Length: 325
Image (cartoon, rainbow, N blue to C red; front, side, top):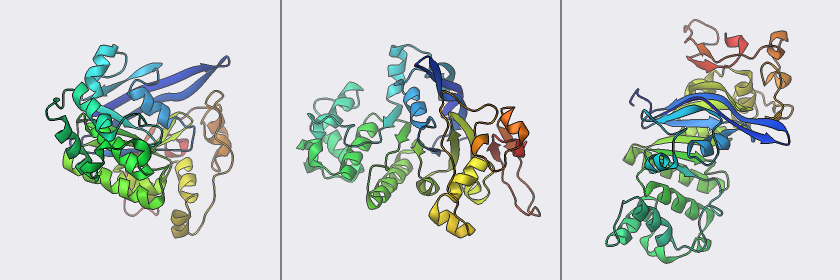
């Protein structure tokens, strides 16, 4: 895996004015995605995950900060410049029932981006559509059908094929399995892994399901009220979480908690991004909070890999917690 990032996000902020208050949906986010990597972005509903993804493709306005795709800016640029990057950065939406045009056949749904981005001609577009359907495990004979004639899992395969049509380098997968049955989720995850291996794609995989994260992601960024509070490689995060919020999320998963011998759902509600708590945003719900937590906002501290002799080794990573200072 290359050490030069494909996507680099620096101090990105997405704020909205709502009823006279500033909603800080994304509030100073930094991360990188490397070629061939899957970075999972996890957190409870309302933490800013989907807002961030939509901002990266230009669907939400960015208040400040910047993002670069292979060293070139994709934020704060003209619409004409954005179009040049659109084929390299594609968003797959959560709801396969709402993301496909019901008036288009599958052939039209896939053919339109192929023609628009110069990936096919009128003479070979049908062959290209058949090839895309084959890559996502669908029969080419289905291409003259409409989206309402397919199941949820088949529709999501069509959505993936549509994103692949323009030969992207990075896919933003926004809760792409959450609307599907568990058995279908596994099929879609296997498809995404297979496509990644064949094409060398990178994924920013947005989800609230930590079970899915462990299966598909190389690294994990945990979000809470618009900020990243922990960024680790996947195995380190599951084996030795550093931030109290991450620990609480893991304890709330039945199968993970069973291995640890306890299950303790996270208490309290996610605070509003329009009125975030002072200091550490997690401190009102944190069982380890102390006085400083309510007064100062912690930065992202780098975690040093501890020695094998330590009773609880903590591999390297980043954590926004004074306990990891």
